[in-house]
Amino acid sequence: MSSQSPFRLLFASIVVVFLSVGCRSGDESPATNLSWDMVQDSTDRVLTIQGGLKGPESVQYDPKQDVYFISNFNGDAAADSNGFISRAQPDGTIDSLKFMTGTSAHPMHGPRGMTISGDTLFVADQKGIHGFNRHSGAHISFTDFTDFEPGFLNDVAIGPDNHLYVTDSGKPLLYRMSGNNVSIAVDSLSHVNNGIMLDKANQRLVMAAWGDGQTFLTWHPANNKLDSAGTGLGGDYDGIEPISQNSFIVTSQADSTLQLIKNGSGKIFLRVPGNPADMGIDTKRNRVAVPYIALNRVDIWQLPNQE
Image 1: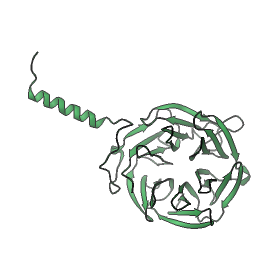
Image 2 (image 1 turned 90 degrees about the vertical axis):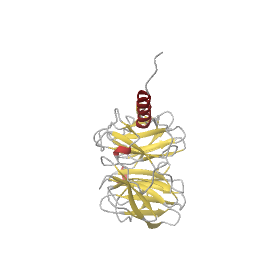
Image 3 (image 1 turned 180 degrees about the vertical axis):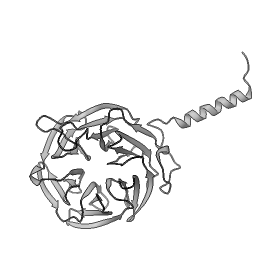
Image 4 (image 1 turned 60 degrees about the vertical axis):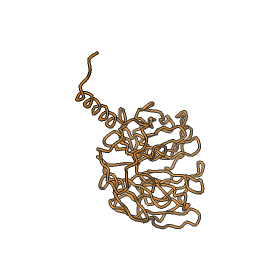
């Protein structure tokens, strides 16, 4: 057997190292050298989910099943009856493109924000809220909001009182849903809102301002108190997700960034290649999944360690 030169061995070692660095799998251990003071961009992306997505608007991570649910407008978000929810694996594989769809009686037009309660995935749509079994994908409920003439039902969150709350980016209202009963929880918001999240530590809901508003409104169901959780740097905020007791992250469509809001002020930590919609947080891998309606894809980045 012929011997190999030291140069060839060195070259082979360099190639192996290069390939191991350049190819990242969906289950790779989280990076440890990231900081919230760094500003990541597309070159830092871990992976992309695409292949059939049609106007993806929101991502919801299901930690018990370790899957991503992705809502798809699929054209007109108002009334074309062809919206759907995809199910994807953390490695970027879409294992069911149309895992959840509407029914003939209750079609899904342009699914948007989502949240999980028990075995149900709740999804905001043009005329109301759909409920799906998160295991089988079966459509199990629909709550009609048309009596309230909603502008653009946008996002949903479970409140500290276990009621479901829904934002309307067409009207400065916050709705409450209890079973199939719908009411207006707050009718005096200073501006319309898009994303909504539960701040468990402070027993309140936090909303992301849409339009020119930069103030993140908070509302306490226990005492009906409206307050502020601070301001950001851009505008047209869409997704909002908690990071720690004193901080949360938001997507800004005004400047195509993701921002950390900590102690009331914002800081950019990620610049993305399109208008970022309603992101999801992979809590197992500490990653953020960012959908773009216009690009028909979802990009995933590693997040820094928790604040």
